[in-house]
Length: 110
Image (cartoon, rainbow, N blue to C red; front, side, top):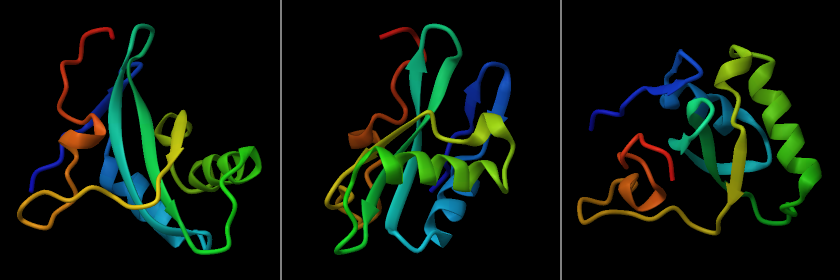
């Protein structure tokens, strides 16, 4: 499956690179990154994260994950939004359904 680059404030971000970084964090069980339309930046980096059992989804872990990505990737690649979900949606082929998470939508303003 081809994954589109996210263009945020003129910078191209590879969502797979951000996902790979998030998956290294000990609190993260699974993660998918998509571009969400934004009036100011064109798109922002949004991460959908499934936390490991026993980890509480709160502002603390949200900030920690953003900083964790910033340590290894350029600042513009860090998620501006993180949404914690219990399970990633899958399509009929058993792959993550990025369209269900908002990827591939018009890059216009919401």
